[in-house]
Length: 434
Ligand SMILES: Cc1ncc(COP(=O)(O)O)c(C=O)c1O
Image (cartoon, rainbow, N blue to C red):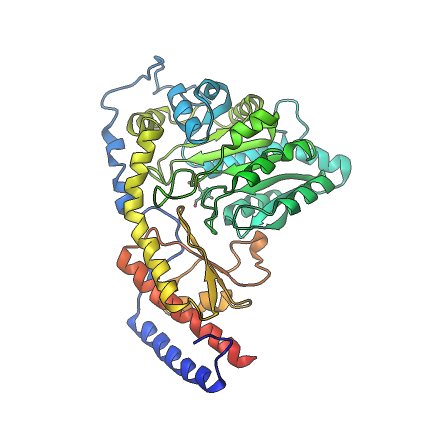
């Protein structure tokens, strides 16, 4: 049944059936969760060798005693390894990569905090000082739907968020360039360039080039906040590659405006991984100096564990292929359910990501909150509607993020059966109320 061609009688029949099915799901009393973009136990198990890999090693190849304080910016071997994931050449890695402790989100938090209050580089003007001088609030562009925690970082600092559209190949760069040119108080843009959270899109080469060049037209101290959280997280070898923004920015002389982040949270252990940054040498130096007020050094033994375990980009790729084997069937189950129940009904559209952790589903306008509430009633938790937009405000109230990585395959299938019924029920009810 296509929702826009259904007769009132057909809609009434459908409503009765869908309500009955919904009640059946409620009676089953399931408790399923599609909110958490975290690795499953089987994925975590892939990295258990990390636990014993050091034996009684205490020093790295450079002869540093890793048990002690110091080496604030990370051990050289870890800089090389993680720099290579972010496209930084080995020879640049010692000055242009920072390797920290667990969590790239905390590195993003520090970066925004330093930029806002202190200026990222030693003698840079802080965003806050510029606000005081110009009277204009600091603003950051937020391609939306996007990652809710990027938005909460901005909200915490009182930074104004400007939503910009995504095209399927990254942000709408005409819109981005026009905004950045017109307003020097726009100090950054959030980017999840490969397998975006939640749309799954991969920025194409032209978009990456134009983002790398933004530093040439933006106001002072502008940052492309390049959160490459899913850099190596493809579901198959056929997934599109991402162009190297570091190479492009280096060629353009805009490295100061590109701050890359990554972590092993979804490569090894989400709670005991390694976060890292790549940028210009001056930014990395400035970041390290500021960071030195908060720490005398990150966990270097864990850095060495990761270097021994993952070794190099080939090692990372082989390890990620094991992840894909576990996670791909869950994405296939989501796609299968949507394809069999929602395709050709006019009741929704969705992404078919080739990697990452999420599927983005768009209901008909005005229905995301209703679908999330119905699913909750039937025991399926979904990310709150609106969470994928700045300030929790999805203007069309139609985007829902589905995260299938953590539950077992059978639970993903069970949750999707509930989900598609909720989508249909909400859509039919809306149609009947027109
Ligand atoms: C886009 C994106 N960035 C960062 C993170 C969190 O990264 P970390 O665990 O390194 O703090 C996530 C987690 O879901 C994410 O989706």
